[in-house]
Image (cartoon, rainbow, N blue to C red; front, side, top):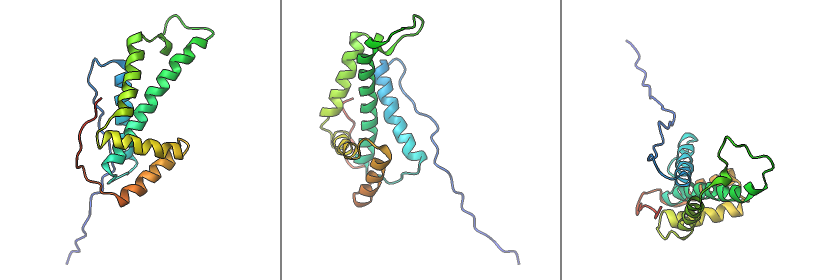
Length: 160
């Protein structure tokens, strides 16, 4: 009599693509990419069943940090000693781009939505208390998610 063995296919987490609308301003594209790449990182590293508010919060924080880095790069660009004439520099942003980055940062900071706004505020506090150590913050999010519901209730979009 042949022995039947049950096999279970186990799939590794994968991310097939991150889609972003064409034609958006550079700062908005960069913010969206940073946010969505954090979602991809969480999937690829096996973070499952995270609380929705905390997951969106860490993604908002990463997008926010990217925007801040661009503004800081702009202010430091004035101190370059030998600018290259062939490549555009971060400091060569239009006034529109600078204003857009500041607007996006303000929108994230003042977002009142339950998921994106509260998530950003909660996770940003975690990042500060962890001295901006991403791995420690992810551990805190993972632990907190085990005591909070993972559901997708009230999954409203942010103002960005």
